[in-house]
Amino acid sequence: MRATTQLVLVLMGGGALTAGAAAAVESGRACQQAQARQDPQAAQPCRRSAWFGGYGYHYGGWHGWYGGTSTFYGATPASGVRAVARGGFGLFGHMFGGFHG
Amino acid sequence: MRRHRITPRADFPERARRLGFAFAEIDGEPYWDESAYWRFTSAEIDTLDDATAELQRLCLAAAEHAVRHNRREILGIPAAAWPLVVRSYETREPSLYGRMDLRWDGGGAPQLLEYNADTPTALYEASVVQWDWLTSVFPGADQFNSLHEKLIATWRQGAWPPAIHFSCMADSVEDRTTIEYFRDTALQAGKQVPFVAIQDIGWDGARFVDLDNRGMDACFKLYPWEFLLSDDFGSHVAAAPTRWIEPAWRLLLSGKGLLALLWELFPGHPNLLPAYREPGRTAGAEIAKPLFGREGANIAAPGRQTAGPYGAQERVWQRYAELPCVDGRYPVLGSWVIGGVPCGLGIREDASPITTDASRFVPHCFDPPGKDASP
View 1 (cartoon, rainbow over the protein chains, first blue to last red):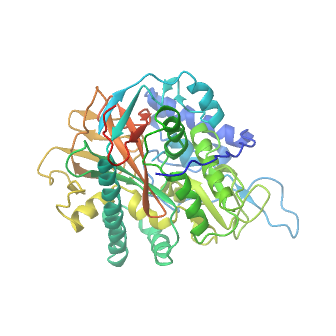
View 2: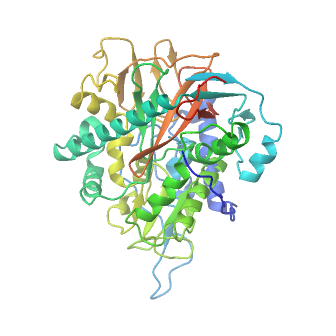
View 3: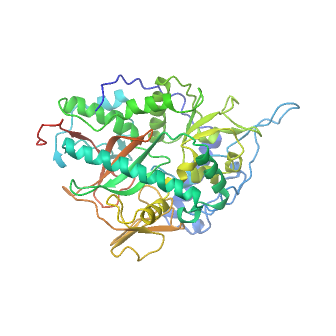
């Protein structure tokens, strides 16, 4: 069905998690594991770590699209420098653990 | 369409390493399984090809209908997201790929179980690892697999900017390998392909930026739309100039609500199974699926129920058509659509009729026209 191709894979670069991302991963995993154990501590919905700004998220539902607010962090913006917020994507991926189609 | 047992290649670990296939095993269990393979006739591959093309036509017609007639509710798309979806559709934002999961045993018509139209995976192994298997094990046979070429061609043809960011969760080897493969194909199509982890995407008040604060004109995201819009930065998506791949209109197809809409629009179509947003209407045993569930989670089938995080979601009830069982394995046929065209097949098997993230990828081949399909 196709001609043989010469596959040139791009070498993976980096790969190390940022400290913030690693913390978020741990937070999400710990919550999921607690739920899996039916740990009483997991009776409350898994929530974002403080790193994400403490947004309360009801695990298992996602009908509140557009519901969050961004948390700016990082260097204090100097005059004339536009502040960049980060960490506003990825939480749901961590919370659900897997999402492949 | 026959399943054959075969001795795995002794040098597979070395081949996997050379290909960069780092998830041949997942959590200590085999994911890539070449202790068996599926062999098709050329006519059977044509049947799958034709069925996929027909289903693609039906799906695009359903998307058009949904937008024209405001069928947001049957699809389960929140009202806040609908304008973005409609705008994406109306502006014809280009789509790259999707994977239809089909039930088929080689007889009758293949039937659509679901359409993974947003973030389908298992593409790298279908395109590259499976092709490597074919050329080393059955060099005289063929494979339903022009994925690599079609990806490059679609990157070239699509109306995307010269630089496309690629993004996924950084801590998943499977996702990272898959995204690197996409980057490779886009690179070969002449694109600039910077990577930024989904967690590292920034918002500067007007646009999304990478870690170097470069604006993201376009972004291929291996991250579902429902997550993207649920995250904090989801509130910026509609206003940002970033063009996403897959585009937002793919939400019309990626949820299980599509199955109910398809059956409403094309009742009795041989490539569809009856499906409704309410239980008890299919006149038979039913399988209940969360609207935006994944990896076989929170599925309720006759005699079986799976756990998962999607239990709070609304559901679709589809007539239960159990997968064929051969050698104790239940295969799902993943039929790939790249640039709107059917162009490849990947088969995943499970010991259960419900395919999950633990299901194994089993390669396939077919004999060129005129040749017998015997092993």
